[in-house]
Image (cartoon, rainbow over all chains, first blue to last red; front, side, top):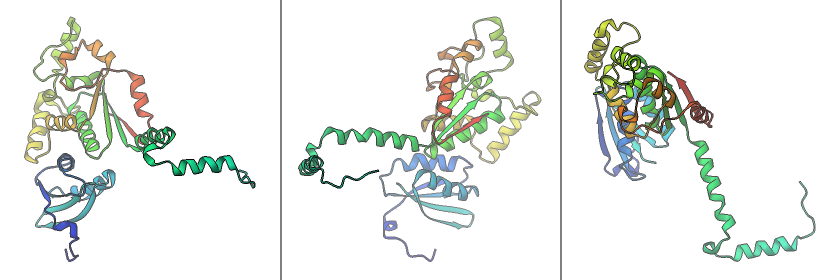
Length: 84
Length: 202
């Protein structure tokens, strides 16, 4: 991404490896993991399920946890979420 | 609506009193507005209610996928399990359930438990479920056991149908742990008619 990183992303993000998981497990594991974070903390999720792109956007809208950015690299999606 | 043109001295005096009162000593009427706000938040909560009527693999699976996804998305999720839909929620190790010979015969013909589900079509004496299970493993799709565990961990409420339990001769100790209190149709109707509620019959 060419966009400058927001200040908050300099904070270390917790990482969740959801590679290989299929619907609905990436969001299920994300929901469970994000509960362990404090408000404002970041969670970086790696996933390979192409359905995750639409699902993470919908999940973010439903739960109010912000989807800070997303990217794809060599078939692996990265979603960075900020806990509400 | 009419606005009084003459100054309302009583109102003004009360207002002055209120304004001069420190927040910590604020009258209780102010605090009383909090439960109303809480119930507004309650009304804004999204809910999913599923009536899980079937005990077949290809129906229980989507029930578990939708309910765990809903719980993960912050929905208050309730699954009413009734008729054949009770059988997947019997402990896996229970083989024959029921009190009388008909109930026992039914459990003999349709083995209860989440690991013993049949397909609604192409069952072929268990070949179908075995092939679907193998495909799920090959493509790393979460199996019903894993989904059920996740759903329960995230607070999905599974409510057994009291009447069906009795008809099948199922006791609470036959059922898996963590189920809600057995209930009836009126309970489900109340859940289904809450605001922001999606209801499915599967």
